Image 1 (cartoon, rainbow, N blue to C red):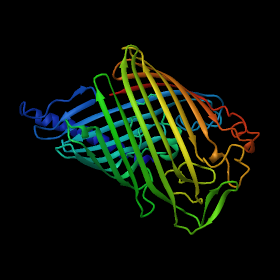
Image 2 (tube, one colour):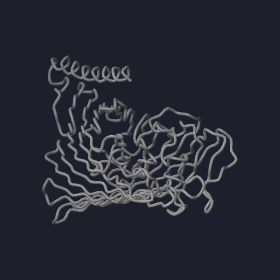
Image 3 (tube, rainbow, N blue to C red):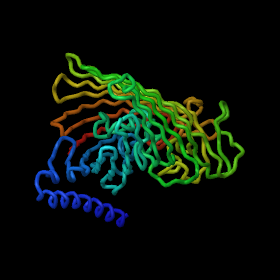
Image 4 (spheres, rainbow, N blue to C red):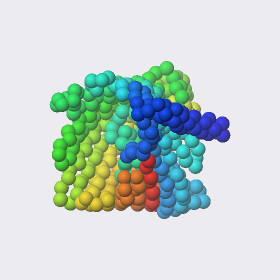
Length: 433
C-alpha cells in the first residue's frame, strides 16, 4: 500500500510539473505560445501552445462528521459501517482530483481519490468524439452507463450517498470496459436522445476473473426549455457471475433456497432492468427537481450477502452463489428556496433483495436470512451553497428494516424481529476547485 501511495504521488507531481514547465518555456515566445494558467469555474486550465491540447485540473473534497443511533451499526448508505466502539466519526468521504487532457476529438481522464483509508483510482479512460458530435466512445475505467444515480456526480448529489439498491448492485460505480455513444445531430429532434452501449468485465474496479463480458445499455431522452427540463431513461444490464463452487442455490417458493446440480465454472444470471424519469421546473417558489427510478431483475449473491459476492469484485469470492429476484426504487424531491442559496431535500429509497419471500418466512425457510431482508430509507436534508466552490449540508437518514420474527436476536444490531436503531446524521462541508 505504501508503494502504491508513493507511485500515485509521483505521477501527480509529474503531471503538475509538466504543466508548469510547458507554460513557462513556451510563454517566453510571445502571445502565440501557451496561455498562462488561470482559475476558472470548473478548475485550473493550462493550454499547451496554439495547436496543443488543454490540461484541466479540477476536484473536490468532502469532509464530514456523522452520528449514529448506536455503536457499530452497518451504515450501508453513508460511508461504511461504524467501528464496534464508535457511534460518531470524522472522515474524508471523498477527496478527488481530476486531470483531463482535452484535444477536442480526444480526452484523456485520470482521477484518483484520497481519503484516510488510502488512495484509489476512480477514473482512467480515453474518450473519443467525432467532429459531428453524433458518435463517440471511450475505453478504460469509467462510470457504468446505467440509470441516473451512477453518472450523477457525488459533488452534485443532494444526498450523502447513492441509494441502497445501487450500492448493492454496483458497489463500485465504475467498471473496466469499452462503450459506444450515439446522439442525434445538434439542432434536430434526435439530439434529445442519447444511446450508450458497451462491454465490461463486470468486476467493478477489480481485475478480470473470467473470459465473459457483461453488456450494459442505456437509452435516454432529455428535453430542455426556457424554465426547466424533463427526461426519461431505460437501462439494461446483461451478464453473469462465475460460480466458484460445485453447487449453487435457487429460491423455490414455500421451500427456500434449493441446491441445484452444477459444477465449478457455471455462470449465474445477472440481469437488471431500470426505468427512470426526471423533471426540473422553475416557478415562483424557486426551482423544483424530482428524480425517480425503479429497478428489477436477478441478482447473484451468497448466503449472507445480497450485494457483491466477491467482496471487491463479482466472481472473486469462494462461496456458492444464491440467485435472488430483486426490486428497488428511489424518489428525490429537491426544492430550491426562491433564488436564494438554500435548498431542502426529501428522499425515499426502497430495496427488496428477495421479492419471492415474505417477512414472516425469512429465517424459517431454508437458506434465508439477513441477506433477504428488505429496507426502506427516508432521508431529509438541507443544503447551503455558500458560493460556487463551497457547500454546507446536513442530512438525516431514517433506516427501516423489514421486521422478520424468524430473525430475532439478543444482539440489538442483529435483531431483525424489531426495528434496528441504525439512523445516521451526516454534517458535511464540500469544497470544489
